[in-house]
Amino acid sequence: MDKKERAKERREKRRQEISLLRTIPYPDHHKWWSLDTIAVVTGGNRGIGFEIAHQLAIHGLTVILTSRDAGVGDEATKVLQEGGLNVFFHQLDVTDPSSIKVFAEWVKQNYGGIDILVNNAGVNFNHGADNSVEFAEQVIGTNYFGNKSMIKAMIPLMRPSTPGARIVNVSSRLGRLNGKRNGIGDDTLRQQLEDVDALSEELIDGTVNKFIEQVKDGSWTSGGWPQSYTDYSMSKLAVNAYTRLLAKMLSDRPEGEKIYINCYCPGLVKTAMTGWAGHISPEEGADTGVWLALLPDQLVTGKFFAERREINF
Image (cartoon, rainbow, N blue to C red; front, side, top):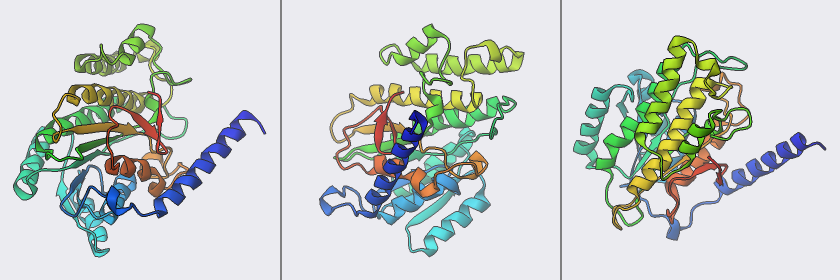
């Protein structure tokens, strides 16, 4: 058995372990949540987002499912409500500041605040061997800037509690800084992004904006950027970096007002976003996100996970 086959065997074994873990109910003394716990899931109308909303609601939380398209979001919510789950819908476009503002005001008026934010909304326009950057600005704008805008709007609404509020960013291994085929080629930039003490919002924004500028002038191919799904990879690299930065910024909040933020890679999931090319079901892809949102002793923050295990950025 060669190295590739052994790795595949290990992944399959881990998938089976997690499938078993999902069937085991949380013991009562681990349940810090109730029906009064409010979780917001962006891009919840299909795929991983729908399944995250589904699983959180099954665990007994109240879930606010959002979708850019009001029609499909409403239909997805009705499917979950027909299953007896406490799920509600509100239209939300994470790329539109006015849409975020309206949503935040609605949440505050109707629920007073939230306890969990799962940033799942995202776009990808490449499948298979494609690596077009035609929609790079839209991809970065949705996956990174939209994600960041939601976090900034929701933090003031995160309710104080002993377990702490949680933010889970759905990301990807494609955004790893030191990926064998998909890392950052500029050594200086990579080292800056690796150093959490030197990391800043200006550096992250400047990195993705430089990439977009190079896309526009046609010089991006020699910029040392990731080589596969370049625009999507850059958007997730920025999400990962912002997760680490924000964890540090939020770390000095007093007990009872803690906010824990982590990101995770769901794997190559069989959804519309992957062109149905994935080998993992949405149920499996949602698992680590739900697990992070519900960790009973949430002392973990600023980390990257896959298959319920911490991985390197």
